[in-house]
Length: 449
Image (cartoon, rainbow, N blue to C red):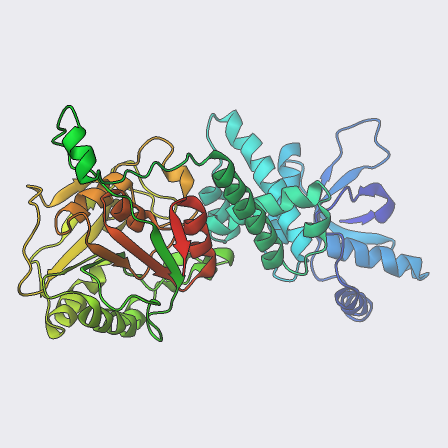
């Protein structure tokens, strides 16, 4: 049915800018062909309203008709409408948002605000049914990944608060990165403020041992400073470190961390099969650096297991017949929600030794708990940091205090910190400067090389 434009309440729309070119094309189409699709309206129930109907969907067509009337073309003062009186009032906005958010040509600010409004409206709807409207549900409804929803919402809230830096961002990705940098800076400031002083225990001198009234059988641990450096092992070596006793690390699984900022699932970017060249470089480095009595211990993705063992053997190492399994239980890190599949529920750890090497300690099991101490996880922004208790248990299997440990993919330094606390001389490198800076900031007794 045809309804006068003046009888329809356009309301506050998500989309403000429909694009001049697109509107011009639509106006030309309306003049030459006519209106092909009706707009969707619903009766206004408020008796005091000056409007008879409320616009639900079809804002672009409605706006094009208004512009044609402004040009003096009165025949467009009425518009074909589909009237739905069975749409609840709270569903009007959701219908409009779903229609617009599926369009790919929205301005990024409108899109962010639209996702926030949609999330808020759906949350109200779900709360009435005593359910929680999660980012995952929202992403499924809008056809985007839930991690992207979680990045859009803070941007939209900043836009609503008229944050000038976010308002001036050129793209959604720029706005997301602005907020990420702020979060990183806030966490680094908190680390500087809250980190406790490190107590360095020095080995007693012979004179002190003679004058000591009682003898403590507990071995004294000397905390050596951790040495950090920005290094890409594919092209360079750690400065001043030519040899080490053991390598203790977490081999990258092929995840490109910048993909966390864009509209796609991280799993789609793993590219583990494309990471084989890095594995070859890694074992070549281990062959050149690890002592004849040394070990290589690394976390790894299960898809790499066979290749890791093959490369280890070809470089003179003997891998253990089965990996150590670290059971995350409910203590998952931010990027690996537990109990969804085996990869996300467990972490695998491989030990490979030089022919002359022997284990320093048997832990009596091949399954270890993944346990964070209270507040420990909050010290890291890196998604793949490891609990200190677990790292220390693994390290104690093959290393002894005083030996040199190297982690070529150290991230924010959770493994090298465990090595330091164990009494080893720890060296950590990463090709990401931001991770090295955070690790150096977090570990007081450390130096940059």
